[in-house]
Length: 294
Image 1 (cartoon, rainbow, N blue to C red):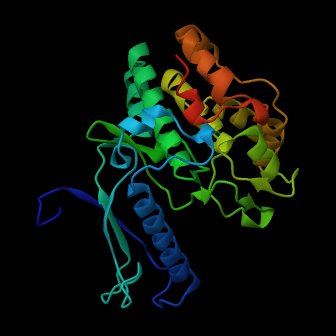
Image 2: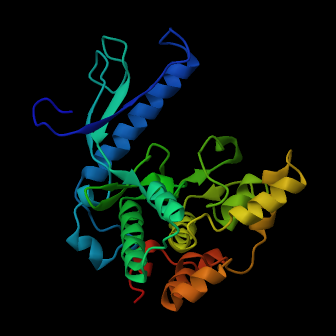
């Protein structure tokens, strides 16, 4: 809790694999903290219209960045005032405190065997698309969008875990696969990149758009829609199961739309099949463009 304001906060501490601050683990943790602070501070700045009109939507004129992204309150600083180990040897990040993640919300609904109403799903879906449109308008790609990385802060759905964000237009090489991603939420082209069918991949908003579509579907199915296929393929060859799944995903030609979603809301299906989860990357729309879907 903030002793000055009485506001409850979240404190993320980074552990070192060694007592030495010069260890590889410690240096990696410092780099993660610095990247997190850099991105969070960038996200707090007012929106500016990006050069690419596909990354902007008038809806963003009516929201503040603090309504879309987790806020950073404080962080440990080294002797130069930079994010790092403080004089007490602590490494931490202080942010606003969430009530629950979208993953927690979905898990709770699954345990209760109660699917959210159509209006609720549409409202949450719009919030997710708006959050990611905001991130892309800031010139960043998340690359690991999933329910776990969206949290509810006093009724606002916000993005977290941003230290892995990369600049739009940057080229990711196979040697940079330290970037976190989740197989059941990644796009077909990212799957192809991971299994080595391309020499590199450009960070574009479509990578996140696919993951947003998977996340929205999960509001209806109450579980990751690609998980059954992943488990089936994995069981046939546990040692190479993930690679086989990614090989399969990379060749996908049609949106894997669950019947439960089709029966639940045909208009939602159009958002997913026409905008977010289009297998042909050139035809997939950005999140900003998808906000125009009725």
